[in-house]
Image 1 (cartoon, helix red, strand yellow):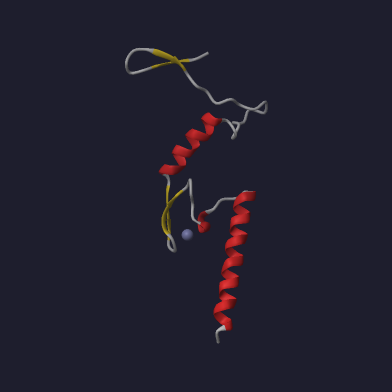
Image 2 (cartoon, protein in one colour):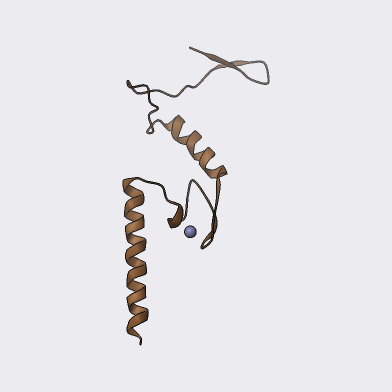
Length: 91
Ligand SMILES: [Zn+2]
């Protein structure tokens, strides 16, 4: 076990990410999740349409890849298409 020295001179066990057997970090690890969240909240994305958002909660234009994000993108596209057709039907 590795130890970490605190500013008050005490030592505490160093929390390390648990790696999967293939050597990759486990994204389900709560320690990993918490650190990733803090990191992502510090990354500001600037969107021309929505303004600023963070990487942790990006706007629909800045979503990365992934199943959950794909669903959001599809829902957004659908919403836009529908609102467009509503607007067009007025004429
Ligand atoms: Zn946006």
